[in-house]
Length: 130
Ligand SMILES: [Zn+2]
Image (cartoon, rainbow, N blue to C red):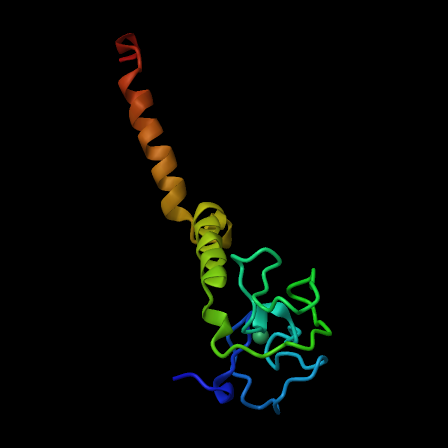
C-alpha cells in the first residue's frame, strides 16, 4: 500500500521522494514548483465536505492550492490520483480535442468540414449549369 515515502505532487504527479518529511510550508514540487503544504495535498482534503476539509477543528483555508499554516496538515500519498484531478484532466482533454487543431496536424478536421459541404453544394447545383 501507499506510504508517506510514496508521496507525489498533487498537481503533476511527480515523486516527492527527494524531499525530507515532514513537509515544510515552503516546500515545493521539484518538477512544477507547486506549493505542497496545501489542502489539495492533505489527507483531510475532501471536495465533498462543506469547507472541503474533514478535520473539523482545523481553521478554514480558502486557498486550497496555496501553502497554508494549518496545524493538521498531513500529506496524502497518491494525492495526484484524486477524483477531482482526473475529472479536470478529462475536461482538458475534451477541450483539446475540440480546439486542438491549431497545432498544425489538423488536416483531418479541415477535410471533414469541407468535403461534406462540397457534396451538399454538388447536390444543390442547378442542372442548368451543365
Ligand atoms: Zn508537481
